[in-house]
Length: 173
View: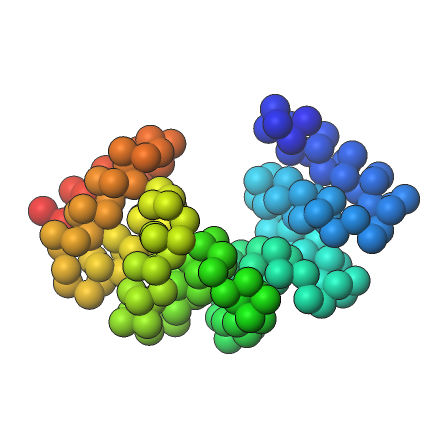
């Protein structure tokens, strides 16, 4: 179901699996993801928090929840703490470094965000989302040429965000 983007059906299956095997943390994160894709952010957060209640040092759950909070631009101090813990466990994980850069951006700490996101681009092999995040930081630092370059590279790598990225490119003109 999840592979077919049938989020509600997949969530129901993950809930059944978790009822029988609550120790399967990846299943909890799959449930969180399915709920997020349905627009159920509270349910997604609850599933991620359930994983952390069972395993407070699950780096993926720490990153998932930290990034979700940063993406929603709320509880930024908590998100920062969660991401610091995730990075203490996996300091060279490009997705985790990206999440830290994103929360720093949301906190208005642009120079720190820039450093983290430049590193994340390298660690994550130029991931499209990481490049878009870095472009946002460059844009807000009044570095339009660098922002344009990151947006174009993001677009070349993944066209699924084409309309949003084209809008950002237009705003730089």
